[in-house]
Length: 464
Figure 1 (spheres, rainbow, N blue to C red):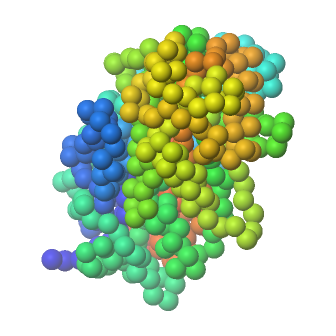
Figure 2 (figure 1 turned 180 degrees about the horizontal axis):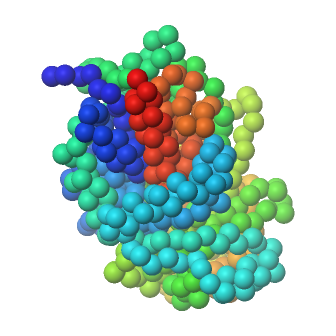
């Protein structure tokens, strides 16, 4: 079998798929996409599909496979450079804005919803209410696909690509092959070597740990991103409805008065469900997330509240630190831990009976009642409580005693290699894109970063 390709893409999430969509426009190119998970239709999760406990599938079907974690996410397309990544820093605001518009058109082409939230006169009023509570609202236009429609959109992209490029699922990239500072290809976990002229690494959040180790082995210059650790909050849908009807994604920022840490809301899921997922890899932990369907509605809304922490030298293992915190929760609960806010404030653990007697019923039935203060550091816990109280001033009912907190939620995009404006690493002809490379923090900027690398590869190939 011929194992020499013009371009190899490692990772089949949004960044990898959009790189492939760009490269597939040329019939002359030999392109290989390596994905350690399954194709989209083969991805099944016992927790998501049957409500049973996490089977710790390897790799986790929720976050691995063609489509990436985006296949089963809430399907939110945040159409702004203000949030969701660092593309504006690499490309400049004008070019980044243009790319986001192009990404949006591609999602629409493959069937994304035409409705956009986050526009209108009500935003000024909501922003004023946030300011009065000591919060900052970041209004962003959002196109919501929904979990089931996002899955279908990515499935159509997969079907479009399969006749045009070579896709190998169930194949994990073990290490990058480079010689004299120039990329040569990749070696997979089964010992096979695939050679290429250009390599685009799109490992996703689940692959961030692998990429971090590869960056160290290749002696790349890296910088730590802030690490985001917190909880998934669940409240009655009616509490958030006035805001989510206008904004859908209510992005709020707060500075903790106790520690001056930046705290923010993330991934709001109106009328959605809380889910658990595994980080996968050689050192998996169970974390918490959320999603919303476009057609199936629950009576609750959930969102993450995350504390951002910047670590300085000599510490250089933010991903390991995040996993350590999540593992404490796993140790206490055997998976995801749940606690009523009222119990947390009273300094007592939640019990099954206290959860059952509460007015709010959890959407993640397998979560184990317990005490988050045994897992979260004091600094994080303090900041989270301060944020909840500030939000309650703006949105009465958010900090009800029956509000549910699930832990731990961790976002693994915590290191960033030195990259050029076209996202090339210090290894010539090797590009790094998406969340796993610390470039993006969401579907749109991940997708756009894949386009950036692919456009540059096409430009160089045309010159050769």
